[in-house]
Structure formats: C-alpha cells, structure tokens
Image 1 (cartoon, rainbow, N blue to C red):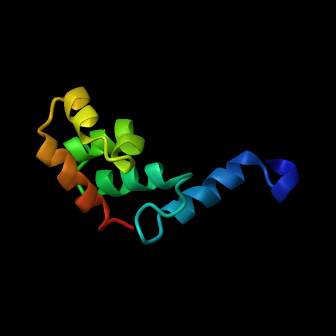
Image 2 (cartoon, rainbow, N blue to C red; image 1 turned 30 degrees about the vertical axis):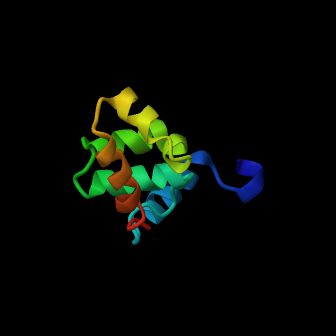
Image 3 (cartoon, helix red, strand yellow; image 1 turned 90 degrees about the vertical axis):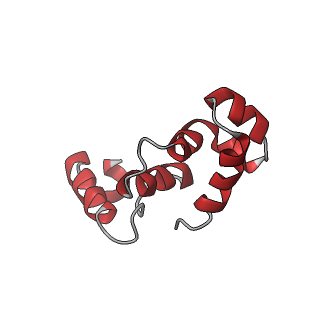
Length: 91
C-alpha cells in the first residue's frame, strides 16, 4: 500500500477512520455489505434478525431465497421479506 499512496499503514488507517466518521453512516466501508452492517449497528439493530440476514445471507436475500434464509436463521418468512424493504431505506 505504501507505494500506491506514499504513506505508511498507520497514516492510512487514521485517514480511513476519519472518512468512516463522516456522514452518511457507512461511508468508507469496503463494500455494500459492510456499509449496511455499519448502518444497522449504528442504529441499534446490531442484534436484530435484519443484521443476521445481511451478515450471513445478503446474497440469498438478493436472489429472493426467503425460505432458505427463514429456515437457516429460524425466523418467520414474513420477517425475511420485510427485511428487504427495510434495507432499501439505508444508504
């Protein structure tokens, strides 16, 4: 990394932490999954079914595999379907 930005890893990490402290919550995440998890955690939903769905089954949710998610996480299928709607409101 040093050759690309001419900085050491500590400076890079401090800069990244600064970016991640900006609005909207989740900016500076490595990917959409990480961004969604950061947003959910910061809104107090770090122990929710929605957080578990994003953490372990985001790809299944995108594919509409609600039954698979419901069975894997032992949650009602209606809650799985509603989670997709809730995620659409995040940045």
